[in-house]
Length: 388
Ligand SMILES: Cc1cc2nc3c(=O)[nH]c(=O)nc-3n(C[C@H](O)[C@H](O)[C@H](O)COP(=O)(O)OP(=O)(O)OC[C@H]3O[C@@H](n4cnc5c(N)ncnc54)[C@H](O)[C@@H]3O)c2cc1C
Image 1 (tube, rainbow, N blue to C red):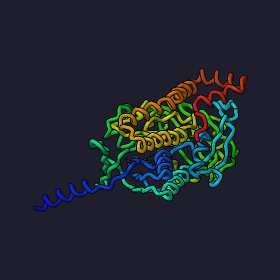
Image 2 (cartoon, rainbow, N blue to C red):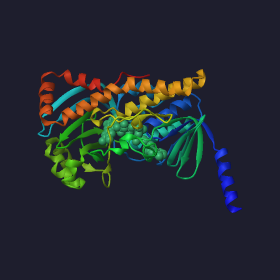
Image 3 (tube, protein in one colour):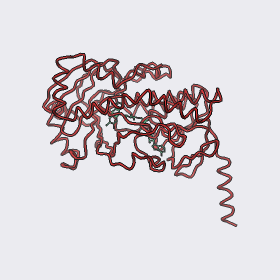
Image 4 (cartoon, helix red, strand yellow):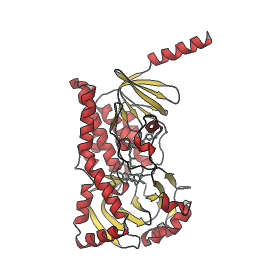
């Protein structure tokens, strides 16, 4: 009798699960931008995010201006939060040789601590509902999606946007091929109190990786690097690695000598995968890193996440007004995502391989110093045109 009652109440709970037009899994940059945009269009949307705001995330925290017109339309104006405008680029090699360039579109510096929370606040104020739970499964049931969480809740939706980032438990449950491959990269981030040019983003190379430096809205300098496990495992811990490897670069040595750490310890992530991913999986439209991660040296992952959110929302919104079939929605998103991002992902891959090869890197520095217009040209190939 007890079991029967329990089973009945579980079925009842499922049948009465709240239904949303769009459910977004993950409330990072991609998820909350999509939520904010949908809410301004009057769509009933639910975001399920596993972490409370605010929190720090491993990221270079430089946002390309290509998304500025779109963000401004959504009320996200970087000056409102004192995010510095960045228009110059400095790159150095291990020995400290420099390459300076102006940035074709430029960008702004904002910490993920502030940016993710800001988008969440704006999306909530516009009517988005947020629930802080961990999604464990998402299944298409003939005409709607059923989304379940670790906390035993069930939600239904007409469309689901997958905005759960680089690597999630959901990638495992969706059996995505990239999860079967080991990735040789790890990321480390720390904020510092230090003097640093407000309008510059710097990229300093070291043995087995590279490190970005730029200022954030709080005045702190964000240091974020990508390192290969092979390079890292020879030292085993971050302090020894920074001391013996990063500080071989004279610019990083000067910076780290003077800078005062603002976190108790750096934050890290492992298993960063740059493998190709599918933008549509089991009917879920993937946005942001869930659809594919560009190499961080391009400084364009967040802009791509924001742009993909816009593309997905435009299509889903059009579908709701024009009676577009589910198959047409998926095909259109797949094709627009590929057309918009495929070539810059390829360019990012090529650029990273070239810069991590010492001989090719030397050639790039020589060529870039001889032909100063070449660097902005190459940068523009990893970015898109401004979106509104
Ligand atoms: C070292 C490094 C440096 C970088 N530097 C830059 C840079 O300078 N500029 C730039 O533009 N890009 C940069 N990037 C890329 C950028 O960080 C990403 O492209 C960006 O974070 C993508 O946003 P997102 O919303 O897709 O993912 P995220 O911001 O990771 O958001 C995903 C969200 O999903 C949530 N989530 C995951 N699984 C679940 C689940 N099962 N249930 C509920 N919630 C879940 C997570 O908690 C998270 O909040 C860098 C990346 C790395 C690795």
